[in-house]
Length: 166
Image 1 (cartoon, rainbow, N blue to C red):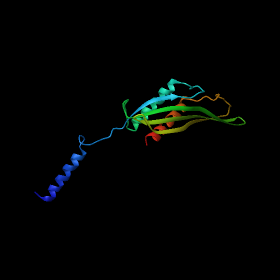
Image 2: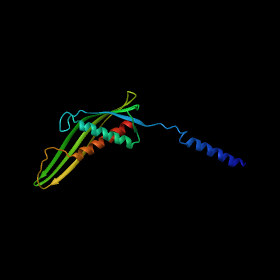
Image 3: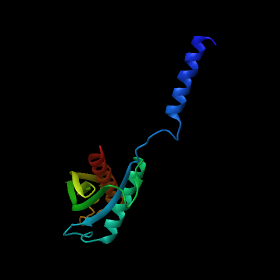
Image 4: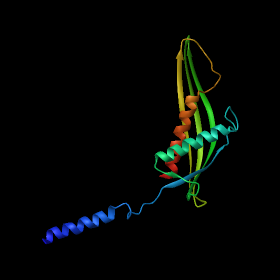
């Protein structure tokens, strides 16, 4: 047999062995979202269990998008605390023209643990704003829309998971 062809056959065999699925050693990315706590003291979402469940679902969705497997027995665990949620309102009035900006601001703290030992801690703050303009002055009394709240929660959750896992 030609020595050149023999060398190619050997190289091909080595490549196939190294890349075959049963021989490859893969490290599984597994994590568990342990607990989400709502520590907000005032406002319409203070102590809301629905907010805790909603944030936990968002966090799990983000982790799945980052190709993590969600397992209760995973060595990595995440705990999240919603520490601040408020509405900031800015109004501008000139004669009959009115501009109103309502921003939902959320601050979350996350702790990443590996086998019970704290590995990383991060605090993020994100906001989502709505601007309305009209020729009549209408006051909503500092209320926020569900869309603004959802956007702020999603942005804060993405930022927190990114800081903790990268």
